[in-house]
Length: 64
Image (cartoon, rainbow, N blue to C red; front, side):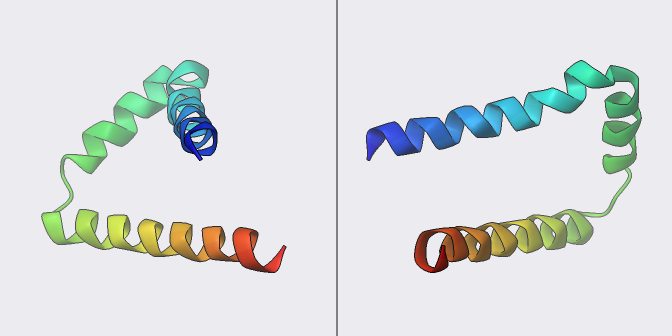
C-alpha cells in the first residue's frame, strides 16, 4: 500500500513539474491569470478536478 501511495505522489510531482520545465514563461502567465480569478471559480475548478480524479480512480480500480 505504501508503495502505491508513494508512487502516486511521485507521479503527481512529475506531472506538476513538467509544465514549469517545458515552458516557464507560459506558466508565469497562467499563474498571473489565476491570481485574477475569483475564489468561487478556483473552488469550482478544484472540485471538478477532484470529482474527475475520483471517477477516474474508480474506473481504473474497478472496471479495468
